[in-house]
Image (cartoon, rainbow, N blue to C red; front, side, top):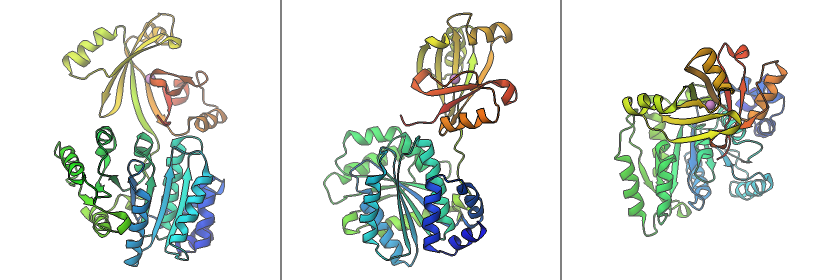
Amino acid sequence: MQDWADQIAKGDVRALARAATVIENRSPQAAELLRELAPHAGRAIVAGITGPPGAGKSTLVDALARAIRNRGKTVGILAVDPTSRVSGGAILGDRIRMQAHHGDSGVFIRSMATRGSVGGLARATADLALLLDASGKDYVLIETVGVGQDEVEIAGVADLTVLVLVPGMGDDVQAIKAGIMEIADIFVINKADRPGAEQVEREIQGVLSLGHRPDGWVPPIVRTVATEATGVEDLLQALDDYAKRGGTTKSQIPNHKSAFSIDHLGIAVKSIEAALGFYEGQLGMQVASRETVAHEKVTVAMLPADGPRIELLEPTDPDSVVGRFLAKRGEGLHHVALRVPDLGSVIERLRAAGARLLAEPQIGAGGHRYVFVHPASTGGVLLELIEDQSR
Ligand code: CO
């Protein structure tokens, strides 16, 4: 295993390709190999390239790869498609793209489609990015299809996110604003020779003018025509500038973001109305959704926050989980909800280890899949595990 990792770190292309397959297939050796590789990683600039279908991302990524090679640097490309469960198309795409960089060992390309959950895909992407980083690639470009929550998660693997937009998107820019605009570190207006480029740039400026980022970075807007390689040098410069700001890249802290996140804190109350007197009336938070979950005999009010949300729980029947909790313990923190990738395999692991699950996985408020773990297993707090799945 040590030898294998060393071969990869020295740039052995065959060792790298074999490792990519092992990692993608989640073979048993993958975890050990990744541990061996981790110390070699942390030098690459890992960039997520995302944007709506038809924005020309693949062409842009190829042009960027060529610009990187022209500078004598090396690049790994991960093309990730969370919307596809078929790998065949991805493989065909690989072949076509490989031909463009034929015989060039300084370019490594892999395509991935969803296998199981998006959480699993994000994990595989993170692991492959680590592999490419450890193999000495100067840049790792992660290209995702579409713009949505899945892409935000996959983009989270990267040090920086490039959002590719095109003229003539109209209302799409509005839709994108809601989500991924906030995480974009660099904006690209591709196909900038088309009418409407000014308009898109104004829209982006509008979003950027709404606030400053805590890190002081002002996301640049780069115009490109990827098919003619126009503006691609500027984009590469923007990647370097971002990576150099403060002298470090995020990937110099080896490994990647945790795949777990706290989704919400559940608070049991006798009356949501009464509790909202505080949360809405006095504190100024706002309820985003209310729902009655019949099988849990509970009414739920969700209050979004920057980070985990607050979930107020009011029983519709004293003879219910929350009803009994109130009778026994009174109002208070009822559970902590953790978002996990690939809930199915987490449950398997917990069962095998003897953790106490309260019931089979259920569908809850907002349509998410969840399961509760008994406080006896978790250090005294009821733990809700939520599947981090495509929405
Ligand atoms: Co909950």
